[in-house]
Image (cartoon, rainbow, N blue to C red; front, side, top):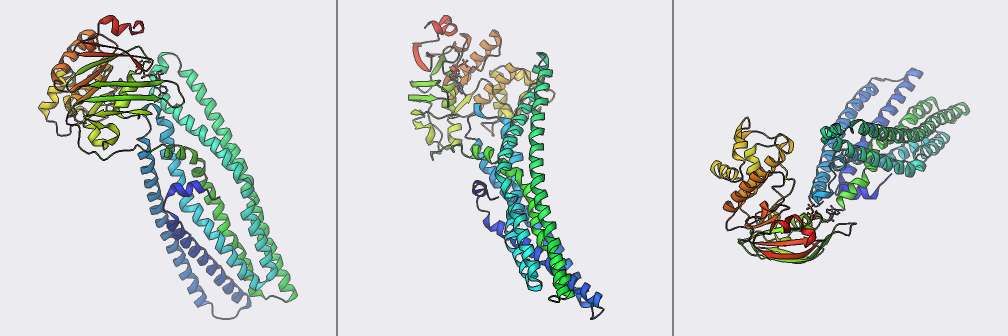
Length: 557
Ligand SMILES: Nc1ncnc2c1ncn2[C@@H]1O[C@H](COP(=O)(O)OP(=O)(O)OP(=O)(O)O)[C@@H](O)[C@H]1O
């Protein structure tokens, strides 16, 4: 089956597929040459005439040549397969960067990027080249057989056509079922990754058994749909095999009849018997390669979905902002398929200002942070940092202009030092320690087995939520960006530690623009102005730090 979308996805591989098909044709031709020579040798031995030594020599040469051709094809297939996978994965990862963080499903994505792409390899490097071999070789062999015994040629031609075409009747159904199976497989992988990450939580709430039962049901469904596929596939393979055996038998009967009537000799009979088997070899290989490449076909939806994510447009402004003015002008954003987001937001934060952004849960504060980070782009309006539209920056310059610390920051399984250096790789030990001290995390790091050289577990799992938050703030402090956006970054701290961190921040961010998104009065104590959001709009603004009742009970605004 030729899948147009899959051909498009692979990009520039037609040349490679033709090269592999040429190798396959040479191998098949060597098989035919071998069979033909062997038939001549057998016939000579039966008749007891002629010198068979040169023919044996030829058989040896053909065997070596066939081995070399198979080796060459395998080498080429491995190279082409690797290059297709690398190219496709690069495209997928490029698009993955455009998927907003909240919409990334790590389990499903990993399955598509790893298993899906892996499954495509045999489709491109085995199935498609073999399809071309099937178009050429059986027809040539039928012609050779026809020359020896026309009736045998007809029998082979008809049965080859049946063996190739009959399974195509089931292709559409096989593909449809395959896609459903792939969806189940992706769902299971995704749920499995999620459950694996949350095992302690599931256990703590006694949900481990319930989850296991759900997995068993999902696995059972996957098994059933796989078995349905296999059954269908077996019928298809069985029919094809039946046609092939029938073809060989009919060709043999036809040539024997010809020998009996005197219209063919013994040599022709042996040649036809040997070639009949070779005629079906490419068709048989096609069937095997179809099953190997079939997984790729079923993964096409997942691949397509990721690849159809619009690419993040980037401008060519490669100089970071020289000042920290932030201008949000008539910005609206709606989450896909939802009616929520932010509406008609306009605000200006002057360079060096510290502004508190407050509002009840769901009022749009984090959405504003995500817009400032360019995790999402406004549907309308624009955001300028340092006088330049965020969309005009090249990514590196944008990251050196504005840094957003999210509510749940990511730490990498690197050393603490390398994590802190993320935005400023040339930060010295003194710079790092100063930033860590500013947000009261230096002592925490010193208490780790290797201090700043301690390698963190995945996402810093050996640290508390508050310690992770403070490391993320220290990392942002080290960045050269003139604008910092802190989205509830002290939410996991006790009030005293929060006060210390906020004071440290105020000292170490002087001259920089800071937007503090918070639910607590302490976090906003150094703000020179506040902006309250409600239902995605600016509801009220005020000078100085927001009073406690405004921060904690903004619904009453
Ligand atoms: N990925 C998403 N898809 C659809 N809707 C979303 C998504 N993220 C947020 N929303 C919705 O957008 C609105 C604004 O959410 P946002 O996270 O910005 O609020 P918030 O003020 O930061 O809330 P909180 O203080 O609880 O963090 C909410 O109604 C929320 O349900």
